[in-house]
Amino acid sequence: MPSDSTTSPVPDEEHVTRMPDDRTSQARGLDDRKAAILTAVVEEYIETAQPVGSGAIAAASAVRVSPATVRNEMAALEADGYLVQPHTSAGRVPTEKGYRYFVDSVGRSANRLPEPQEVRAFFRHMKGELEHLMRDSASLLSRLTDYAAVVVDHSGDGAVVRSVQLVSLTSRVLLVVVVLSNGVVHKHTIELGSDVDEHEVAAVRGVVATVVEGRQPGEGAGAAPTGIPSRDDLARRVLMVLSGSRESDRVYVDGTARVADSFEAVESVRRVLSILEQQLVVVNVLTDVLDRGLNVAIGTETGEDRLEECSVVVAPYEVEGERAGTIAVLGPTRMHYPQAMAAVAAVSRQLGRRLSDGLS
Image 1 (cartoon, rainbow, N blue to C red):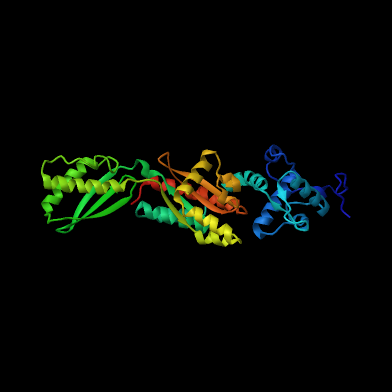
Image 2 (cartoon, one colour; image 1 turned 60 degrees about the vertical axis):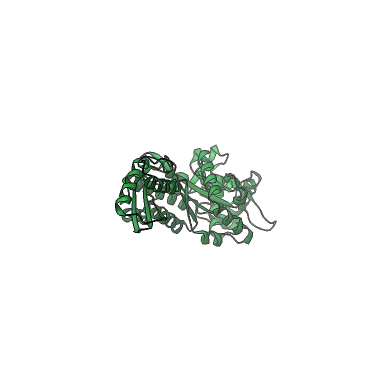
């Protein structure tokens, strides 16, 4: 019968074949054997969503110890707060502390995972307006991870007017088209009280362009420098409409149905969906996570009570070296962390490159 003693005549009996980095395990207060057993418990629970028993861990290829040793080590991990036993007769499940150890251990290996071919192909062939790129990026990230995906575009905060065009749809209906420096296009329709000819439309367009191009929408909204009352009145109307084109953070969410499939309790689903519907809350959560130096927030680490059963993997993306936005996935705490971390890193990297190169 195998012995749990370190003096066993079969030295490999207590050998652990796959370990987190020694420095990481020691820094977190775990020896190599406990670290490997904890990692195996987390991976098993992520796959099965069922409490994990010592027998399953003893049979895992990463851990070559007897079931008795596994039971002792799992009890020690529970006492240290890494695992919890939901029922007396049940196996154990990871706590937030257990997940945090796991995430810190696998972070480096997640970064070394190959970039999905689908990500490179998507950004290589993507063309069109910024809004389409953001929406499709969220959809791509949700497909890659099977979780809810969020893309936040911060670039509108400093966007200025690149060009403005006025198009006569009829003699009394004017289409205003404004293109911002971040690639976003806004269209507005103005109904006129009297007929306006093309010459007058062109003159008003010149007035408006002089006032707004190179400036943020809304700046100079009261300006009307021509001295011709009818022309100045129309110019003021156009400028007022353009003030509504001022950009703020835009949030694109995809995969809410996938969130619903990730939780068994209806109340949990309701809480998570309520968060995703509140764009300001989503932006604040992601910003706070990054500001605290995290790229993964687990349960209460999110700072939002309604996300206590969730984890968030988040990364900023940069355009020409400047932070332009944020992408993230949101799923249950028993998330497939390495895959989610690798996907978020790949999409954020490629999105930043694509935007730096410019849309066409």
